[in-house]
Length: 422
Ligand code: HAM
Image 1 (cartoon, helix red, strand yellow):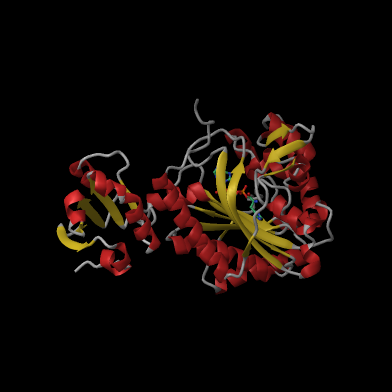
Image 2: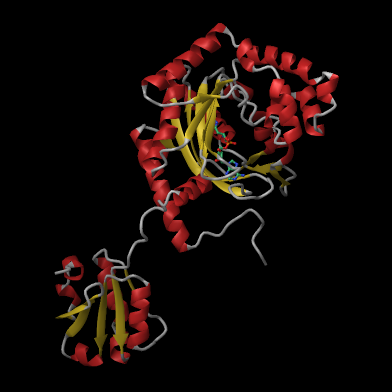
C-alpha cells in the first residue's frame, strides 16, 4: 500500500521543523494580537461553492468532494477563509465585538496535478480580520504577512499588489473585458476554459496558465480604469502607508487571484527561490463574503501562506530551522539486577524533567553506547550489577568523554547532576 499522490509522511526529523515553524508563527500572531481558531477540515460542499466561488478553478476542478452515509455532500477544505467566516457567523461573533482577529494553521486539500511546491494535501497558516473596513487593516495584514517571513529569515520575497475594486467597479470591468474576449481574433485563440470563463466570469481568464491565452490577454483592458473614487482612495492609502513603512511593492494590474470573494486590495508575496510555484502567501480584502454566506454586510481582509513552500524557501537559503532536540540521558543497564531497576531509573530522570531513553533490546554495552551516540545523548548513565551492589552508577559526559561516579540512590539526584558540564 502506498500513500496517495501529492501527500506526505512527516517523520520525527521533519516534524521537528514543522513544530518550530508553527511556534514562530504563533509567536508573531500573538505580537499582533490574533487569536487562534480551529475549524473542521471537512465542511458542507455548499460552503466552498458559495464562498470560494462557483466559477473558480478550485471549485470547478480541485475539490475533494464525497457523499457521506447520510447522503450529504462534504468537501475537504481547499482553503480556510470560508470556514472561518462560517464559524464567525455560526458562533455569532459579530454580536460580541465588532472586530475579530483570527488565525489558523492546518492542512488544506486541492486535487491539483502534483509538482514541486504543489501538493494535494498541503498546509497553510492564515489570518483573517473580520469587521475591519479601514485600509489600515489591509496594511496591518500585509505587514503581519511580511513580518512572519522576516522572522523566519525570508527577507527577499517580493510583494505584488493590486486593487480589483468594489463589486460595482468589477461589474463594469467584467462587461468591458467580455467585449474584448468575444472579439473573433481573441475568442478563436482562447482555450475552452477561457471561452467558458468569458461567459461565466471574465475576470477568471487571468487565472489561465496556458501560454496561448497569456499572449492573447496581453492587450486585455485592466481594472484600474474602472475603479471608483472610493476604491482609488482606499488603494492609495494602502500604497502610501506601505511606502511610509519602507515596504516596497510592485503593482500588477493583472493579479486577480484565483478566488471569487476578493474586493479591492489583493496581494501576494513571491520568491525567486522556488521555480514555477513561486507564491509564498496570498490574500486580500473580501468585503462581500460574510453577506454571501448569510450574514450582515461585514468588511474583512486576510491572507494565507503555504507552509511547504516556506520550508522549501528556508532550506534554499540554508536556514532549515533549529538543530533537533538532544536527548538528556541515555541509560545503559548491563546485567539482570541492573535491568530490574531500569524502569525506576528512567522514571526518576523523567521526574526531574529530563528526557531519558534506554535500549529495549537487551544488547551489550558497546551497542548501547552506539545507540546513545545516535540519539545525540548529552550523558550516558551506565551501571552493571557490581556497581549497583556498591550503590554507584557511572555518568559519562558524551561530548567530553569524561566519566564520573554518582550515587545510585535516586532520591539524592537533581537536574544539575546530569546537566553539569565541568
Ligand atoms: P491561495 O492563494 O489559494 O489563498 O493560497 C495561499 C497559499 O497557499 C499560496 O500562496 C501557496 O503558498 C499555498 N498553496 C496553495 N495551493 C497549494 C498547493 N496545492 N500546494 C502547496 N501550497 C499551496 C487562499 O487560500 C486564501 N484563503 C487566502 C486568504 C485568506 N485570502 C483572504 N484570507
